[in-house]
Length: 273
Image (cartoon, rainbow, N blue to C red):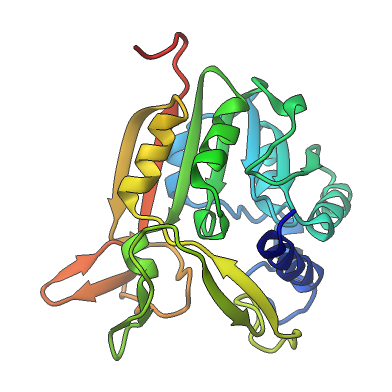
């Protein structure tokens, strides 16, 4: 493991230990999840369709809430994450929720061969690729887990939205694509502003939409759909205005900039020519 990956894992270990552990953490809100709250959003559920009886791999599962909600919808769910603290908490949460799911500690850029060709769906959502140093390796690894005809489903922050530092005033300070490592020191956590956490170094990587799609194609996947979404059911970065209908958006002049993108890509039953 290189220095940057080790630093990122230390950050996510620290977050996994505190996320969902306080009454003030409404972002994760473990008690309502245990009471039956569905944490998945409409975009990923629509793309996945009926998952009952299907083998589903949830990449970057953190401490397991979304993985377990896929299980609630009837999937045979497996979650993976590179954080041992996250995987430990996910297994504990599985017992508390009375659900069934498997959890595997693994770097999504180098998933173990035991996961090869086992899944109908591989799903990754919200805050994914910005943590990935090798985009091509990530796509190859995700594709490796799919059976022929299986699909990779992604919903993530749009690269254009990631360039925006603040909405009012409108400031952009993040590269659009290129994959060049960006160093930062992270203080606190997005889930609960009241939680004190040690300042930790982290490395992130900006990718353009074109780079993401190209990596999927290089991995042997067929692009079924690519959509750019100008509204979201939640504010993934805490900077967006909220409309009267409860949705978040990014107004710009007389139009709106995309906030999220969604991708569905299938592993062909026979090799592409």
